[in-house]
Length: 301
Image 1 (cartoon, rainbow, N blue to C red):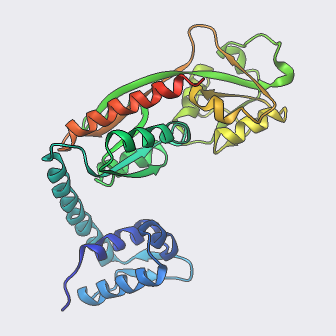
Image 2 (cartoon, rainbow, N blue to C red):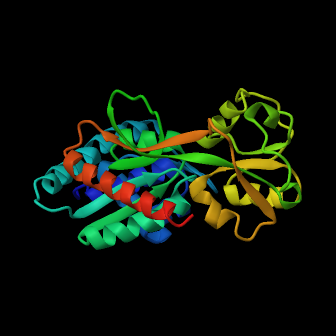
């Protein structure tokens, strides 16, 4: 019998998560045939079928689900050994798996990566952009070292470090540039364009307008601020975006941008990681670097 390898277990985990050979291969940065060979070898070594294969989707068999649970335990234990080794080093080096929510990533990540390259050249940054719920799940599973997102998270198993806060601004058609800035309550009577459900920014915008998340929709739900701002430029409605998004999202749109009077709607941005992580000291240094990156970005607008 051949030995089961860690590589095979990582490919197995990826395929179980993606349910598709092509997407799993892309996640693992290998070709689909190479992934298929490794999965077949793992099944042959264990003497069981781990997946039911259909034309466009694969799903775990019953024994496959049991194997996945054990495989995840093994992989997380191996990752923990690596974390312990990195934590024992004097400097900051090795792999850093950092998650960021989509309403921050396009604007702040370039500055963060630039600062990391200068301050910690030995760090290999692996970035993951997705919604808060997924980041927290992957953080809990040990697949991320830390995540940058909107606070509060209020998870007893996580350390929360507040980095900075920023205001929301109003974006409306350029033709309305001379109109008074509406209050949050007044926005309820306007066609407010929002990010689709799942984005925490959507709920924060609704809270400012005193509207519940289950309110009827008469506008447009977008997957990005870019879509929302372009729709505002077309005269469809108004939207809210964070300050950091203004330079990128409004530069080519026929819109006007306004600050709300006090008290302004704001969000708190923070970094979270597992309280049990041996990388706490290193992650605190990364948190300081993120604050510097945000300050540099704020000076540009």
